[in-house]
Length: 275
Image 1 (cartoon, rainbow, N blue to C red):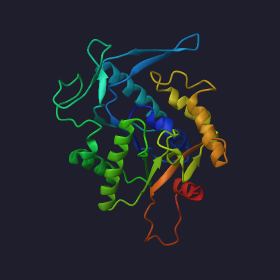
Image 2: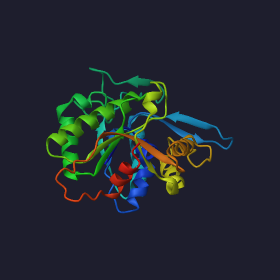
Image 3: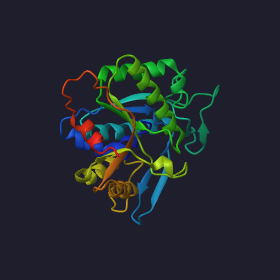
Image 4: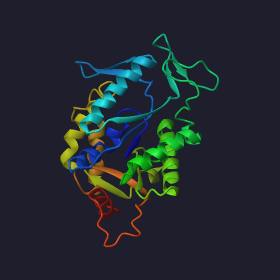
């Protein structure tokens, strides 16, 4: 199970892991936390520059969910949209950035009483929904953001997923939880440290194609100097392979009553690569 905040987060952070383990028979449970109503539409121009135009909430949601569906389909699955509203959006004039606040008029496509992604981790019903999903799907591992994030919606998604995970554990869930790592050092170099990794070297090109399915956000994913390609190689150098995705353990899977433990493939790689 992978829990991202926005369309493209999952592919960027763990697309290589998903491709690698889908190829050996894993089912990917693809959870999208926000409604994706915010953002621009980027287009790669012939001169190599990127032009971005803005869209209002309903067209933006529809566009990003189509792209999300395409990427999830490439992983043999369909997205589960939690549809928590984002904190900001483009106004009806298609230009003005607006912020979703208490008591404001709701933008098109946002139902009343829907907690935003910033407050979902404090909403019992939102937590319960994700707890029930974890218990129903019973994944071997849950992967989501770490709490050191420059994007507040990534941080809030980490809180929601992590809160829900521990409540699922209290209800008998025995799978693992790992946080993927960001590459920024703005919170200190400590927050770039990793404990384990997945080597996805043979899937690097396919990961870039997967990211590129989010056309309105990543129109240059096919380029050799694309930042996420370079980052994957950089993590690979740190891990002693060609391309890697890196994680910290929050909790290992509970195998206490298993006789003669035989770890499934993903858990085995994560354990063997733990530093």
